[in-house]
Image (cartoon, rainbow, N blue to C red; front, side, top):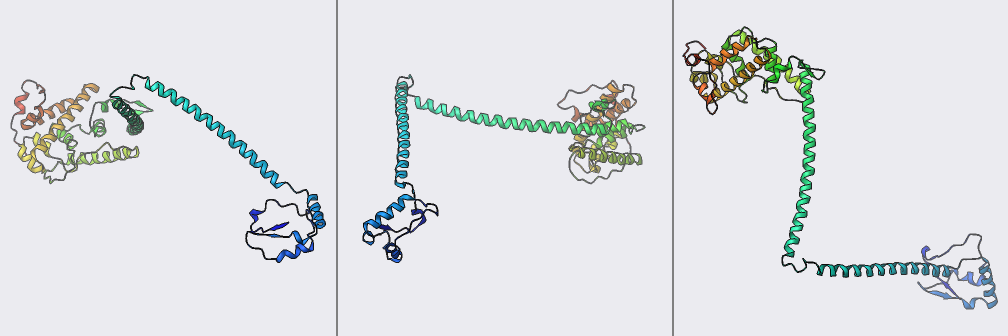
Length: 368
Protein backbone atom coordinates (compact mmCIF):
# COMPACT_ATOMS: atom_id res chain seq x y z
CA UNK A 1 0.00 0.00 0.00
CA UNK A 2 1.24 3.55 -0.86
CA UNK A 3 0.35 7.16 -0.07
CA UNK A 4 0.60 9.59 -3.05
CA UNK A 5 1.45 13.28 -2.67
CA UNK A 6 -1.26 15.73 -3.89
CA UNK A 7 0.37 19.14 -4.45
CA UNK A 8 -2.42 20.91 -6.44
CA UNK A 9 -6.20 20.88 -6.38
CA UNK A 10 -6.35 19.96 -10.05
CA UNK A 11 -4.82 16.58 -9.15
CA UNK A 12 -7.89 15.70 -7.08
CA UNK A 13 -10.37 13.79 -9.27
CA UNK A 14 -13.30 13.57 -6.86
CA UNK A 15 -14.40 14.98 -3.50
CA UNK A 16 -17.09 13.04 -1.63
CA UNK A 17 -19.69 14.71 0.56
CA UNK A 18 -18.54 15.90 4.02
CA UNK A 19 -20.47 13.01 5.65
CA UNK A 20 -18.54 10.42 3.68
CA UNK A 21 -15.52 9.77 5.89
CA UNK A 22 -13.55 6.96 7.48
CA UNK A 23 -11.39 6.83 10.58
CA UNK A 24 -7.76 6.71 9.60
CA UNK A 25 -5.80 4.36 11.90
CA UNK A 26 -3.24 5.96 14.18
CA UNK A 27 -0.18 4.46 12.42
CA UNK A 28 -1.27 6.21 9.23
CA UNK A 29 -2.08 9.50 10.95
CA UNK A 30 1.39 9.54 12.33
CA UNK A 31 2.71 9.84 8.79
CA UNK A 32 1.16 13.33 8.31
CA UNK A 33 4.52 15.02 8.87
CA UNK A 34 6.65 12.33 7.27
CA UNK A 35 9.00 13.69 4.61
CA UNK A 36 8.10 12.64 1.07
CA UNK A 37 10.18 13.56 -1.94
CA UNK A 38 8.49 15.59 -4.70
CA UNK A 39 6.62 13.44 -7.17
CA UNK A 40 7.19 10.34 -5.04
CA UNK A 41 4.91 8.10 -2.99
CA UNK A 42 5.42 6.53 0.43
CA UNK A 43 5.11 2.72 0.94
CA UNK A 44 2.93 2.12 4.00
CA UNK A 45 2.23 -1.61 3.53
CA UNK A 46 3.98 -2.48 6.76
CA UNK A 47 2.19 0.13 8.86
CA UNK A 48 -0.99 -1.96 9.32
CA UNK A 49 -1.74 -5.63 9.67
CA UNK A 50 -3.57 -7.33 6.79
CA UNK A 51 -6.75 -7.49 8.86
CA UNK A 52 -6.55 -3.76 9.54
CA UNK A 53 -6.07 -3.08 5.84
CA UNK A 54 -9.05 -5.24 5.02
CA UNK A 55 -11.22 -3.43 7.57
CA UNK A 56 -10.12 -0.04 6.16
CA UNK A 57 -10.99 -1.16 2.65
CA UNK A 58 -14.42 -2.29 3.78
CA UNK A 59 -15.07 1.15 5.29
CA UNK A 60 -13.95 2.89 2.07
CA UNK A 61 -16.10 0.55 -0.06
CA UNK A 62 -19.06 1.33 2.20
CA UNK A 63 -18.79 5.01 1.21
CA UNK A 64 -19.94 4.20 -2.33
CA UNK A 65 -17.24 6.28 -4.00
CA UNK A 66 -17.44 6.40 -7.82
CA UNK A 67 -15.24 4.29 -10.03
CA UNK A 68 -13.15 7.11 -11.41
CA UNK A 69 -11.02 4.81 -13.46
CA UNK A 70 -14.17 3.34 -15.00
CA UNK A 71 -15.49 6.79 -15.76
CA UNK A 72 -12.23 7.71 -17.40
CA UNK A 73 -12.25 4.57 -19.54
CA UNK A 74 -15.86 5.22 -20.56
CA UNK A 75 -15.09 8.83 -21.44
CA UNK A 76 -12.07 7.81 -23.48
CA UNK A 77 -14.02 5.13 -25.28
CA UNK A 78 -16.78 7.65 -26.16
CA UNK A 79 -14.31 10.22 -27.42
CA UNK A 80 -12.46 7.60 -29.39
CA UNK A 81 -15.67 6.41 -31.03
CA UNK A 82 -16.55 10.00 -31.98
CA UNK A 83 -13.09 10.54 -33.40
CA UNK A 84 -13.42 7.36 -35.43
CA UNK A 85 -16.73 8.59 -36.84
CA UNK A 86 -15.19 11.96 -37.73
CA UNK A 87 -12.22 10.22 -39.30
CA UNK A 88 -14.46 7.91 -41.33
CA UNK A 89 -16.53 10.88 -42.50
CA UNK A 90 -13.38 12.80 -43.49
CA UNK A 91 -12.07 9.78 -45.39
CA UNK A 92 -15.37 9.48 -47.22
CA UNK A 93 -15.21 13.15 -48.21
CA UNK A 94 -11.64 12.72 -49.37
CA UNK A 95 -12.69 9.74 -51.52
CA UNK A 96 -15.54 11.77 -52.98
CA UNK A 97 -13.21 14.72 -53.63
CA UNK A 98 -10.70 12.44 -55.33
CA UNK A 99 -13.46 10.98 -57.48
CA UNK A 100 -14.72 14.48 -58.37
CA UNK A 101 -11.16 15.54 -59.16
CA UNK A 102 -10.72 12.59 -61.47
CA UNK A 103 -14.03 13.32 -63.16
CA UNK A 104 -13.15 17.00 -63.68
CA UNK A 105 -9.68 16.09 -64.91
CA UNK A 106 -11.15 13.81 -67.53
CA UNK A 107 -13.68 16.50 -68.47
CA UNK A 108 -10.97 19.18 -68.78
CA UNK A 109 -8.70 16.97 -70.83
CA UNK A 110 -11.55 16.14 -73.15
CA UNK A 111 -12.48 19.81 -73.62
CA UNK A 112 -11.66 21.53 -76.87
CA UNK A 113 -9.79 24.31 -75.05
CA UNK A 114 -7.41 21.95 -73.26
CA UNK A 115 -4.96 21.95 -76.16
CA UNK A 116 -5.64 25.55 -77.23
CA UNK A 117 -2.32 27.40 -77.73
CA UNK A 118 -3.79 30.70 -76.50
CA UNK A 119 -5.61 29.30 -73.50
CA UNK A 120 -3.59 31.41 -71.06
CA UNK A 121 -4.42 34.52 -73.04
CA UNK A 122 -8.11 33.64 -72.94
CA UNK A 123 -7.88 33.08 -69.20
CA UNK A 124 -6.27 36.49 -68.83
CA UNK A 125 -9.07 38.02 -70.86
CA UNK A 126 -11.66 36.41 -68.63
CA UNK A 127 -9.90 37.85 -65.58
CA UNK A 128 -9.91 41.26 -67.20
CA UNK A 129 -13.60 40.94 -68.03
CA UNK A 130 -14.36 40.06 -64.42
CA UNK A 131 -12.30 43.01 -63.17
CA UNK A 132 -13.96 45.40 -65.61
CA UNK A 133 -17.38 44.12 -64.60
CA UNK A 134 -16.57 44.86 -60.96
CA UNK A 135 -15.39 48.34 -61.91
CA UNK A 136 -18.51 48.85 -64.00
CA UNK A 137 -20.72 47.89 -61.07
CA UNK A 138 -18.77 50.24 -58.81
CA UNK A 139 -19.28 53.09 -61.26
CA UNK A 140 -22.98 52.27 -61.61
CA UNK A 141 -23.37 52.36 -57.84
CA UNK A 142 -21.51 55.66 -57.67
CA UNK A 143 -23.62 57.09 -60.50
CA UNK A 144 -26.79 56.01 -58.71
CA UNK A 145 -25.61 57.73 -55.53
CA UNK A 146 -24.72 60.92 -57.40
CA UNK A 147 -28.04 60.84 -59.24
CA UNK A 148 -29.89 60.51 -55.95
CA UNK A 149 -27.86 63.40 -54.52
CA UNK A 150 -28.58 65.52 -57.61
CA UNK A 151 -32.28 64.75 -57.37
CA UNK A 152 -32.29 65.74 -53.71
CA UNK A 153 -30.41 68.94 -54.55
CA UNK A 154 -32.80 69.71 -57.41
CA UNK A 155 -35.84 69.12 -55.20
CA UNK A 156 -34.38 71.45 -52.59
CA UNK A 157 -33.62 74.06 -55.26
CA UNK A 158 -37.12 73.89 -56.70
CA UNK A 159 -38.68 74.12 -53.25
CA UNK A 160 -36.49 77.11 -52.45
CA UNK A 161 -37.40 78.89 -55.69
CA UNK A 162 -41.08 78.18 -55.10
CA UNK A 163 -40.79 79.64 -51.62
CA UNK A 164 -39.28 82.88 -52.97
CA UNK A 165 -41.86 83.11 -55.76
CA UNK A 166 -44.65 82.67 -53.21
CA UNK A 167 -43.09 85.44 -51.15
CA UNK A 168 -43.26 87.91 -54.05
CA UNK A 169 -46.63 86.82 -55.41
CA UNK A 170 -45.57 84.91 -58.53
CA UNK A 171 -47.04 81.71 -57.09
CA UNK A 172 -50.10 81.23 -54.94
CA UNK A 173 -50.76 77.86 -53.35
CA UNK A 174 -48.41 76.30 -55.87
CA UNK A 175 -50.06 77.81 -58.97
CA UNK A 176 -48.65 80.67 -61.08
CA UNK A 177 -50.31 84.06 -60.80
CA UNK A 178 -50.66 86.74 -63.47
CA UNK A 179 -47.29 88.15 -62.37
CA UNK A 180 -45.56 84.89 -63.29
CA UNK A 181 -45.84 85.70 -67.01
CA UNK A 182 -43.53 88.69 -66.58
CA UNK A 183 -40.81 86.51 -65.07
CA UNK A 184 -41.08 83.46 -67.33
CA UNK A 185 -39.27 84.97 -70.33
CA UNK A 186 -36.51 86.86 -68.50
CA UNK A 187 -33.39 84.69 -68.46
CA UNK A 188 -31.05 86.49 -66.10
CA UNK A 189 -29.75 85.93 -62.58
CA UNK A 190 -31.46 89.19 -61.62
CA UNK A 191 -34.68 88.21 -63.39
CA UNK A 192 -36.76 88.61 -60.23
CA UNK A 193 -35.44 92.15 -59.71
CA UNK A 194 -36.17 93.05 -63.33
CA UNK A 195 -39.67 91.62 -63.15
CA UNK A 196 -40.38 93.44 -59.88
CA UNK A 197 -39.04 96.67 -61.37
CA UNK A 198 -41.51 96.29 -64.27
CA UNK A 199 -44.38 95.31 -61.97
CA UNK A 200 -43.76 98.29 -59.68
CA UNK A 201 -43.68 100.72 -62.65
CA UNK A 202 -40.26 102.06 -61.75
CA UNK A 203 -39.40 102.64 -65.43
CA UNK A 204 -42.43 104.85 -66.04
CA UNK A 205 -41.71 108.46 -67.06
CA UNK A 206 -38.04 107.65 -67.76
CA UNK A 207 -36.39 108.86 -70.96
CA UNK A 208 -35.02 106.15 -73.30
CA UNK A 209 -31.41 106.88 -72.33
CA UNK A 210 -32.38 106.56 -68.65
CA UNK A 211 -34.11 103.23 -69.33
CA UNK A 212 -30.98 101.91 -71.04
CA UNK A 213 -28.90 103.23 -68.13
CA UNK A 214 -31.03 101.34 -65.60
CA UNK A 215 -30.70 98.07 -67.49
CA UNK A 216 -26.93 98.51 -67.77
CA UNK A 217 -26.65 98.37 -63.97
CA UNK A 218 -27.62 94.68 -64.14
CA UNK A 219 -25.28 93.91 -67.05
CA UNK A 220 -21.84 94.37 -65.45
CA UNK A 221 -21.27 91.21 -63.40
CA UNK A 222 -17.52 91.14 -62.79
CA UNK A 223 -16.12 91.34 -59.28
CA UNK A 224 -13.78 94.25 -59.89
CA UNK A 225 -13.10 97.65 -58.39
CA UNK A 226 -12.56 100.74 -60.51
CA UNK A 227 -12.75 104.50 -60.19
CA UNK A 228 -15.96 105.77 -61.73
CA UNK A 229 -16.23 109.57 -62.11
CA UNK A 230 -19.73 109.66 -63.64
CA UNK A 231 -22.54 111.33 -61.72
CA UNK A 232 -26.21 110.44 -61.97
CA UNK A 233 -29.18 112.78 -61.80
CA UNK A 234 -31.23 112.70 -58.62
CA UNK A 235 -34.10 110.62 -60.02
CA UNK A 236 -31.71 107.81 -61.03
CA UNK A 237 -29.92 107.96 -57.67
CA UNK A 238 -33.30 107.50 -56.00
CA UNK A 239 -34.06 104.56 -58.29
CA UNK A 240 -30.73 102.89 -57.39
CA UNK A 241 -31.58 103.27 -53.70
CA UNK A 242 -34.96 101.62 -54.26
CA UNK A 243 -33.28 98.81 -56.20
CA UNK A 244 -30.79 98.30 -53.36
CA UNK A 245 -33.67 97.94 -50.88
CA UNK A 246 -35.45 95.50 -53.19
CA UNK A 247 -32.22 93.53 -53.70
CA UNK A 248 -31.74 93.17 -49.94
CA UNK A 249 -35.31 91.90 -49.59
CA UNK A 250 -34.86 89.37 -52.42
CA UNK A 251 -31.45 88.19 -51.22
CA UNK A 252 -32.71 87.66 -47.66
CA UNK A 253 -35.65 85.63 -48.98
CA UNK A 254 -33.31 83.53 -51.13
CA UNK A 255 -30.89 82.89 -48.28
CA UNK A 256 -33.71 81.68 -46.06
CA UNK A 257 -34.68 79.27 -48.84
CA UNK A 258 -31.08 78.08 -49.26
CA UNK A 259 -30.57 79.89 -52.58
CA UNK A 260 -27.95 82.27 -53.94
CA UNK A 261 -29.26 83.46 -57.32
CA UNK A 262 -29.78 87.20 -57.32
CA UNK A 263 -26.62 89.34 -57.47
CA UNK A 264 -28.16 92.79 -57.71
CA UNK A 265 -26.75 95.85 -59.45
CA UNK A 266 -23.03 96.59 -59.46
CA UNK A 267 -22.10 99.23 -56.92
CA UNK A 268 -19.60 101.02 -59.18
CA UNK A 269 -21.01 100.66 -62.69
CA UNK A 270 -23.30 103.56 -63.55
CA UNK A 271 -23.44 106.56 -65.86
CA UNK A 272 -21.63 104.98 -68.80
CA UNK A 273 -24.70 103.84 -70.73
CA UNK A 274 -26.49 107.17 -70.27
CA UNK A 275 -23.49 109.05 -71.62
CA UNK A 276 -23.21 106.66 -74.59
CA UNK A 277 -26.88 107.03 -75.46
CA UNK A 278 -26.47 110.80 -75.36
CA UNK A 279 -23.70 110.68 -77.93
CA UNK A 280 -20.43 110.42 -75.98
CA UNK A 281 -17.52 108.67 -77.67
CA UNK A 282 -16.58 105.20 -76.43
CA UNK A 283 -13.06 106.32 -75.53
CA UNK A 284 -14.46 109.06 -73.29
CA UNK A 285 -17.05 106.74 -71.74
CA UNK A 286 -14.44 104.08 -70.88
CA UNK A 287 -12.09 106.73 -69.45
CA UNK A 288 -14.70 108.20 -67.10
CA UNK A 289 -16.10 104.84 -65.91
CA UNK A 290 -12.58 103.52 -65.26
CA UNK A 291 -12.78 100.37 -67.42
CA UNK A 292 -11.32 99.17 -70.71
CA UNK A 293 -13.31 99.77 -73.85
CA UNK A 294 -13.74 96.01 -74.35
CA UNK A 295 -15.38 95.60 -70.94
CA UNK A 296 -17.71 98.51 -71.60
CA UNK A 297 -18.72 97.21 -75.06
CA UNK A 298 -19.38 93.71 -73.65
CA UNK A 299 -21.51 95.22 -70.88
CA UNK A 300 -23.50 97.26 -73.39
CA UNK A 301 -24.05 94.12 -75.46
CA UNK A 302 -25.44 92.29 -72.46
CA UNK A 303 -27.63 95.31 -71.69
CA UNK A 304 -29.13 95.01 -75.16
CA UNK A 305 -29.85 91.31 -74.54
CA UNK A 306 -31.66 92.04 -71.27
CA UNK A 307 -33.68 94.90 -72.77
CA UNK A 308 -34.71 92.69 -75.71
CA UNK A 309 -35.86 89.98 -73.30
CA UNK A 310 -37.99 92.45 -71.36
CA UNK A 311 -39.30 93.99 -74.58
CA UNK A 312 -40.27 90.56 -75.95
CA UNK A 313 -41.93 89.65 -72.66
CA UNK A 314 -44.01 92.84 -72.68
CA UNK A 315 -45.10 92.22 -76.29
CA UNK A 316 -46.37 88.78 -75.29
CA UNK A 317 -47.92 89.68 -71.93
CA UNK A 318 -48.95 93.31 -72.36
CA UNK A 319 -48.88 94.20 -76.06
CA UNK A 320 -50.29 97.69 -75.40
CA UNK A 321 -47.72 98.59 -72.76
CA UNK A 322 -46.14 101.99 -73.62
CA UNK A 323 -42.80 100.82 -72.26
CA UNK A 324 -42.38 98.63 -75.36
CA UNK A 325 -41.87 101.75 -77.48
CA UNK A 326 -39.56 103.30 -74.88
CA UNK A 327 -37.44 100.15 -74.85
CA UNK A 328 -37.32 100.19 -78.66
CA UNK A 329 -36.00 103.78 -78.63
CA UNK A 330 -33.49 102.89 -75.91
CA UNK A 331 -32.23 99.92 -77.94
CA UNK A 332 -31.78 102.16 -80.99
CA UNK A 333 -29.76 104.63 -78.94
CA UNK A 334 -27.44 101.89 -77.70
CA UNK A 335 -26.93 100.23 -81.08
CA UNK A 336 -24.49 102.59 -82.75
CA UNK A 337 -20.82 102.63 -83.60
CA UNK A 338 -18.61 99.99 -82.05
CA UNK A 339 -21.49 98.59 -79.96
CA UNK A 340 -23.49 97.86 -83.09
CA UNK A 341 -20.48 96.27 -84.75
CA UNK A 342 -19.70 94.11 -81.73
CA UNK A 343 -23.33 93.13 -81.23
CA UNK A 344 -23.70 91.81 -84.78
CA UNK A 345 -20.28 90.20 -85.33
CA UNK A 346 -20.70 86.44 -85.47
CA UNK A 347 -24.48 86.69 -85.42
CA UNK A 348 -27.15 87.37 -88.01
CA UNK A 349 -27.80 91.12 -87.81
CA UNK A 350 -31.25 92.12 -86.67
CA UNK A 351 -32.77 94.29 -89.45
CA UNK A 352 -33.84 97.77 -88.37
CA UNK A 353 -36.77 99.73 -89.80
CA UNK A 354 -36.03 102.01 -92.73
CA UNK A 355 -34.48 105.30 -91.61
CA UNK A 356 -33.27 104.04 -88.21
CA UNK A 357 -29.81 103.06 -89.41
CA UNK A 358 -29.07 106.65 -90.32
CA UNK A 359 -30.34 107.90 -86.99
CA UNK A 360 -28.19 105.36 -85.10
CA UNK A 361 -25.08 106.65 -86.82
CA UNK A 362 -25.72 110.29 -86.00
CA UNK A 363 -23.28 112.05 -83.73
CA UNK A 364 -25.18 113.61 -80.88
CA UNK A 365 -23.52 116.39 -78.96
CA UNK A 366 -24.58 116.45 -75.32
CA UNK A 367 -23.24 116.53 -71.80
CA UNK A 368 -22.47 113.54 -69.65
